[in-house]
Length: 346
Ligand code: SAH
Image 1: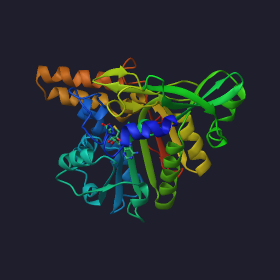
Image 2: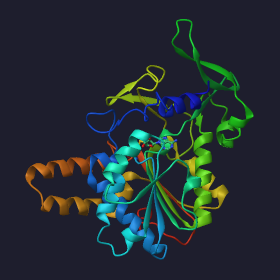
Image 3: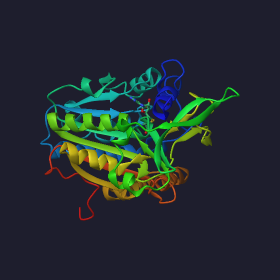
């Protein structure tokens, strides 16, 4: 079985899949994401969405789409931060792209004050309306396939059953279908190592680009990953905030891979969509004013709360923490749209 099929089953198998059976987030869970660390993350994304809505001409109806909303915390913070913006809430038709029934229920609870539509595919987005799409730690959950260059040849890494009944990695000759998506510079360098490519993510991005072109709009993705396409095995399994062996306890660990942001840029250019970034999460949040927001919150808070506001801010923007590993990229249907957070001069 290729690694992508394995990853898709581990995460999304209807009965045994990791996301299908549990709420994995937070201190008592397996991992913590930016919206779960601090309300300021969602507030910044909220003001970013309002700014984009205004730049799109403040349409009286638009699709506010989140991909992979987890517990629904980010969307709840976006809505809370924007409630005083005249017309924004009425115009926003909230769509949530989510595969897990357990998480759909959590999202419905977190957003009980609003009307939300859960969708299982981008093709189900309400047609004819401009789109503002956000996705935090969504792309890293999309299945990757791994190929390895060794002994002068590309092999695909596959998963099979070992003599002792466990799972083990084996190799088969890489198919053209997979090699087609590898950048020429990587193929040409002929260095030994693993390269990750995700037909699923590529297909998803093409659908996003088409949606933006057909309906007008913007997409903002935040995720951990690298600026440039490069060799490297980044597949990782995490449980209870610790790294685990990817091949052990399938369905019990969160499995992700780092996102190749250069690949997102490449696909957007092919599709004729304008790209801003990638920039680091630190740069993006600082330019949107997260430090000013933190100060305002601290002015109105008790000392004990001040500590948690400061800790939250540091976790989001410190280069040693999430500040530089996490990147932000924005896709726009129209090259005249100028999203905030990407340009130093703004
Ligand atoms: N954005 C949230 C959760 C990130 S975890 C946060 O930042 O806290 C990844 C989310 O994407 C989960 O909600 C998971 O169920 C969802 N997901 C993963 N793969 C998906 C797929 N192929 N289709 C739809 N949702 C998916």
